[in-house]
Length: 359
Image 1 (cartoon, rainbow, N blue to C red):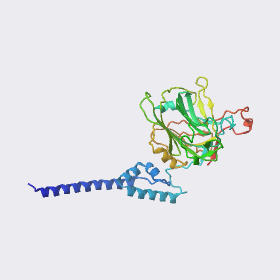
Image 2 (image 1 turned 60 degrees about the vertical axis):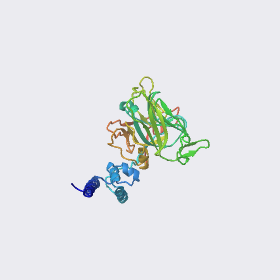
Image 3 (image 1 turned 180 degrees about the vertical axis):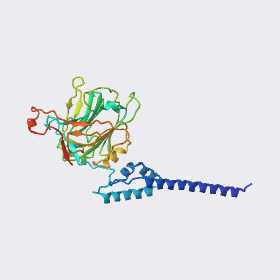
Image 4 (image 1 turned 90 degrees about the horizontal axis):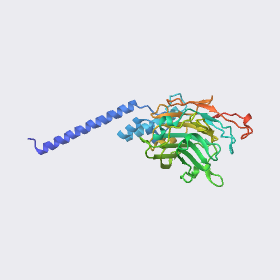
């Protein structure tokens, strides 16, 4: 029989061999990752770089120092390739779509908007969703929507402002109309109108994300989270239980499609604003997703081809009278306007449709 001393030495030797084999496996996986991954062609912060490729995340788990070196190298390459013809993994929209608002005060606009066939009920969004959009307010006032659909008071999917000083998020039968200051928005993001802190109208772009947690049924509510510029503003439990309402058309941009008589489509509550990079998923994204998208900038991540993407309008075409849905569902938008010489005396002499703006 082996002595206790020799037995202990053999156990140590076997443990060393096992450790070396595991280390070899780790080094081989690192080698494969480095060989397979594609460098990002835009300068990114650390968190956005990690989220841009699962291989980056895995490399950071295996060897944080090596991952940080590749992160630095990617950003250096991106800086050197800026302005070249290299195929980027990010997009830079040169345009956004601007709306004049509805015909009421204070906008006296042309009721210009974009019509789509996108119906949130077609994708069971009451069982979980994420909406990401960028908006530039040009005028702020009472009840103005960047986009929306309403089949019933308990079947809403609407995003905008309730007043200059208040948000408006309509999900199912719930409407969030808290003030910006009441939700803790930093006043550096706002302007003071002499009475209230309101959204800026000086060309500032804001990024909103609204998430509704995934669930299997409507028996009880689930969490709805609202983010502004990557920061969580509101976390509440609500229940979007009613669905199935039908309207002749789907969601509008630049205003809301609210059910009129019967199933007739009805434009209401337009907003004089510009819209860019609207993405809708039929699942809740992770808690750090909103900050990662915001930190990537309004130039935005190209969401095309991502899992669970049910609607994606980049608003960067720059010409024409249609807005392409870059998801697989093809709910493309069409320019529309409903002018009123009563509400807007100059309507007959101004362009009635939304306007492409280079930004």
